[in-house]
Image 1 (cartoon, rainbow, N blue to C red):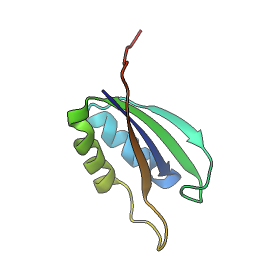
Image 2 (cartoon, rainbow, N blue to C red):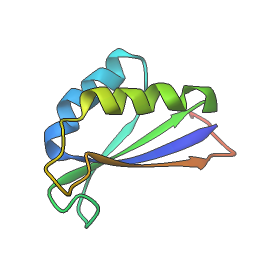
Image 3 (cartoon, helix red, strand yellow):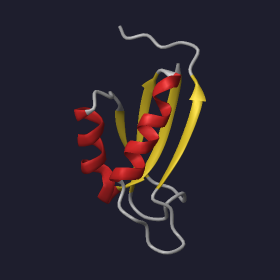
Image 4 (tube, rainbow, N blue to C red):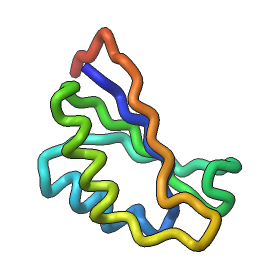
Amino acid sequence: MKLILAVIRDVDDSPLTERLTRDGFRFTRMASTGGFLRKGNVTLLIGLPEEKIETVIEIFRQTCCPAEEGRNRAILFAVDAPLFEQL
């Protein structure tokens, strides 16, 4: 199991979360601030099987708007999640 921590721009929030939901991915959305994208941003936590990581990354590539010069569209971290349980 993997956990993707994704920091995205505010403008990409609705299109991306709608696409993730439509494609069957569940996530937790948190408003966040910080220096990764240097503007308003949102952090998504996405738990998924390792074999689905490339699918989700491709959704980010297709959905996030092109960034301004010198800026990123999104920042993604994929970390091991040895325990995933829904209660």
